[in-house]
Structures are given as C-alpha cells and as structure tokens.
Length: 152
Image (cartoon, rainbow, N blue to C red; front, top):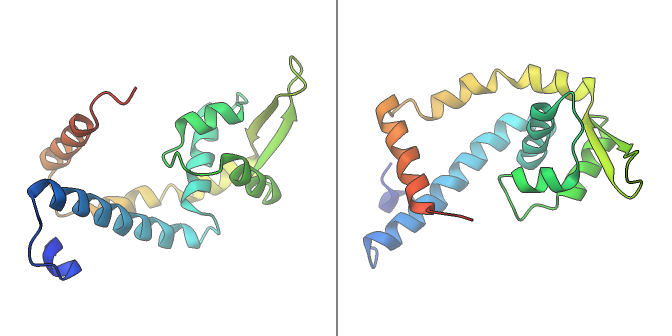
C-alpha cells in the first residue's frame, strides 16, 4: 500500500520528508509483525535481540557493555532486559573471576532451546519481503547503509 493511502496524507513537503516518514512507518509496521511472532514465545523484540547476541557469543560469556554495543535499539535499557531474561531462566549471571565488579552473562540451555524453536521465524520473516526480489532486497540494504554513512 502506498504511504499516502496508509496514513491519509496527500502530499509531503519534500521527497526527503516522505522518505523519513516512510522509514518510520515501515519500521513500526515491521516491529508490529515481529512482536506478533514473538508474543507466542512470551518475549519482546529487545529480549529476542539480547538472546540472539548471547547465542552468538555462546559458549563464551559476555558482559553488559558488549550487549549494549550490539543491540539494535540503542535506547533500550539493557540491564532491565537482562534482569527479565534472568527471571525467565533464559540467561544466567556469573561473577567475573578477574574483576568481581563485573558480571558475565551466558545464555542458558533453556534460552538456546527457545531460540532454536523460534528459528522457524526466519522463514516467516521472508514472507514479509515476498514482494521484493533478492536484487531489490540487496539494493535496499545497500541504500540504507549508504544513507547512514559513517556512524562512528
């Protein structure tokens, strides 16, 4: 559906304004889709992101600083997200032997099993992009990377 129809707006001040609104609208649309899939597993998008980061580190431990640096949503409260994952027994905390002020985080077997059961979502995610060819997907990825430029 065209953006103009979706948000009931006939014109934009500029193509740049339309692009910004379109990116925000599409991001929210995609987040809603993800949230619906994750609801079955009783986790949020941010919790899913942290679990995937920890699975990527597994069997090694990692700290909160590493998680924060890799999170997709930089505004998320990583400490609180980890607390909730610990309560759900998907993540465990281990005291760092080198620096007792530091806490190491490790995904649990239960967390790994949950993610494995959710791997089917990758197939469902592909349906979101079924209107695009691989060439178009590659182009969009390239253009988004270009738009962000040098983020550092």
